Each structure stands twice: as structure tokens, then as C-alpha cells.
Amino acid sequence: MSSLKILVAPLNWGLGHATRCIPIIKNLENLGAEVLIASDGIALDLLKKEFPDNVFFEIPGYNIDYKGKNFGWSMLRQSAKILTAIAKEHRAIKKIVDEHAITAIIADNRYGCYAKGCYNVFMTHQLNIISPAKVFDKPVNSINHLLAGNFEKIWVPDFGGEVNLAGQLSNGNNLNVTYLGPLSRMGRKEVEKKYDVAVVLSGPEPKRSEFELEIFRQALQLVDKRFIVVRGLPERWEYYFMKPHLEVVSFMTSNMLNETMLAADVIIARSGYSTVMDLWKLEKPALLVPTPGQTEQEYLAKALFDKKLFLTQSQEGLDIKKALTEVNSYQGFSTQNIVEPDLIQILRDFILKLKQASA
Image (tube, rainbow, N blue to C red; front, side, top):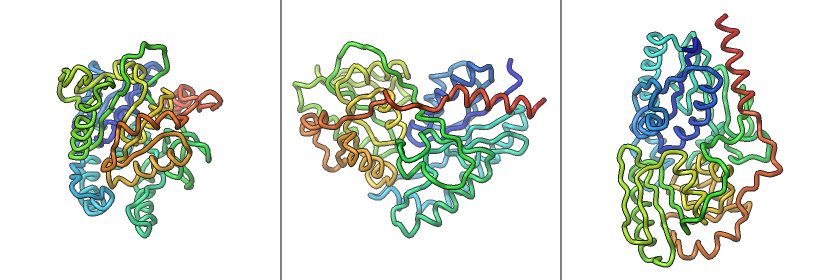
């Protein structure tokens, strides 16, 4: 058993924060660290399926509701609730650290997951948060940076500089930042084509279900195209054919999803940042549909569309038939000439630092 115990704590906000922690967890374990995992909800369910032998802790969730048309205004309205949740998770993490002799914490967008006596890392691609109205940008980011100041280091899953994936979200600031490069559980390999379209659903309710219903409605009419819809529900297991051309599965492990996405001509998904990183790894064409009112996803979708990388449509204006005639006009990512940061070396240096501090 390793003397280094590293607690990885991703935010339960859709599945993206959990999925991008998967390569971190696997590489840390390959380097000899013992990784423990703390989260809640579907993020915790997913990681239990990926790492059945690890130690898990359920910590308080943020329990944000997503009612209303504008996601950003909903978040601002619930800011006091979020700060209360941060305080609760901080108390829970302190107890875990005290009882299990944790050496370091890697908190993916969980502002309360830090503790004295540990080396605390905050992972985020949003050094700059885009608020629903520009007047709020400065105060929102002042709080963002203040809370991030409780951590010794900030890891950003992107490239540093102007040529990056997250645009202005991950640029700038005088914070103690290390850029990791894109984090994805996906990889390129040769697989046989099985689908015209793979739909990968994710994100908070009720927006996920609303998007799903519209996908089903349109896919049922496109009988000349073969679809698979991955519902993004790791807490259940369902697999069936809604129609001969429409295959439905509630959840897939990383390897299954990797092969499914590679086996499709086109991906339809939200424009969440973890999806963007997956598309970077897979080099697949995609239709990106941002969650309505979620400023980060709307920004990413527009930025990638403006660069002629990916087609985007609004959820209200979703037209799959039209999209399939246009999507290949967008070039997608090509990773061939980009030098990525050496994630293994960054994690090796991190572990060495922890060993030296504990010696």
C-alpha cells in the first residue's frame, strides 16, 4: 500500500468533471499513489463503475436547481446556497483528511475541498467565469479567485497561451497555474463504422431530459440513419432498440463509449468542456448544442463555430436532418502538429514534491 494517499474530489455537475478526473486517477495509480475518491450523485456513481476497487466517500452536494430559462441568472440567484454547500463540503473533507491521513487533495471545481496539513490542488478550466451580464463578471471572478486562493496550486486542463481549447475561460490571471493539456478518457484507434450518429447526453436536469426528448423525436423520423443514444445515466442500466435504427443505452464505461464514438460518423453532444476535450482526442466531426442559458457552453459553442471547427445549433432550433448535411463542412480538431504538455511528467513531479514534503 502506498504511503501517499491522494483524494480526488470532482464536482457532481453532469458527468464532465468526473470523466476528466479518470486519466488523472489512472496515471496517479500507475505512478504508485493510492487514490481515494469523494463526490456525490451521478459523478460518484460513474467513478464507482470505473474504479470498483477504490475507497469512496459521499460528500455533500451543491443541490442546485436548474429551473428557468437562463442558467446563469439561476446560478446567481442561488449564490448563497452555493456558498453554504462549499462550507458543508469543507467540513466533510476535513473529517476525511483527519481519519484517513490524506497527503494531498485534487479538487475539480469543488471550492471547499481543501484542508490544512494537505497539499491542495484546484482543477478548473474556468479561470475566468462568464456571467449572464457583463456587469457581474468582475465581482463573480473576484470571488472565484478568492476561493481558489485556498489551494496551493491550480491545474488547468488546457494549453497555456492563445492557442487553446477553452478560449478566454482558461487564459490570463496571476494565479499559480500549471497547464496540463486536454484531459480525456478517450483515445484514437481503428474501429468499424456502426452508426451514422452517436448522441452523447449529459448535464443537469431537467435540461438533459428536455434535450433527450427532442433528440428522440427527430431521430425517430430519420429512419435512413442509424443512431445510438447514450443517455448519461450511470445510476441505472438499460439497453434497448426504440426502433430498428435507434439504439438506446443508459450508460457506457469509458472503453465502450470510446469505441462507440469512434464507430459513428458524427457526434451530437452538449458543448461542455469535457466533451470538447474528448473531441480533441477523437478528431471527430460534431454538432454541439449548448445547454440553454449556460453561458460557458454558449461561449464555447460560438467560439468553436466561429473558428469553423464545429457546427452548433441551439436546443430550440435543433434540426438534426439539416445538421447532417452541414456538419462535414466544419474541420474539427487536428492534433497532429500540437505539442501537448507531458501529463505523466507533471504528475511524477507532483508525487515527488509530496514525498519530499513528507520525508
